[in-house]
Picture 1 (cartoon, rainbow, N blue to C red):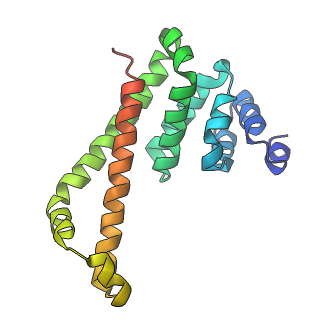
Picture 2: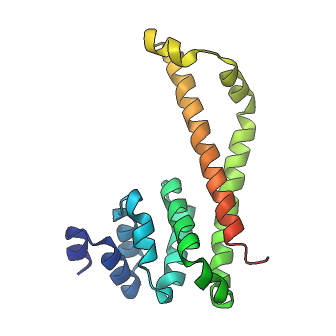
Length: 174
């Protein structure tokens, strides 16, 4: 039934079925079958009774999965769309929210450490004026690597910003 729903491009139905079956591999498959632009719609269709299980699955993915930005997008959308339910039922969801908070904090710290270690390189890269313009006329491999590093730094900054917002939204202590 889950594969049929996925083949019919019904990711909400497939995810709810996988949550009902409570199979980690099926839940993961359904989460990753969702197009990033459809995450808000799918997240809004999740009934409250499956919210805890979905947050558990996302927490596990954060700890093991290389698709960090996508999983953080899921967390952010769940927080925005189900924020009232989460606040009203914080006692029931507190353990899973604390686990999510710990996972996001760990990732945030790892990214902050990475940025701190690369601070000198980032300052040097930012001081290079016109590197993009020269890249078009002279595709020097070193310049291409500089641009890749700058792009990676921007992505890390965005992920850190998203993780801070999610931590604030899921703050179960406050």
